[in-house]
Image: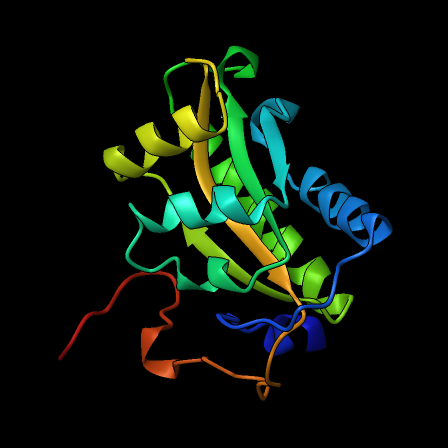
Length: 172
């Protein structure tokens, strides 16, 4: 549980490099996620080219973390691998993979950020072109990685008033 509470969104990084071994561990964590009927339709594009990062800043207003990030892992789905084509389960599958990757990065003391691509069509089209993704590969988001420029305290976001048992009781 500690890793879950320690995971925080990092938007500014130091210039330290992340090892290939740590990147592989983060990728393995992503691939350990559950997926619909074990389809494992996720594919990952590991990027370290700062020029590529800068280009994405042109279309994403919240991508400033890319200015200092060391590594970005684009999480996509190969729609040809879907076990239930057209149902959209890939979104949940890739989201689970991204969350696992963020948690593994935290466990490795690597700062991370979930940067969304889907469902903004302009971002999808841009990243597909930038990373030469074929039509059947759909991007969900980016896991932005680096050494955090500052430490953040763990956070507990538990909200008792948003928990219901058996039925949703709503406001009285």
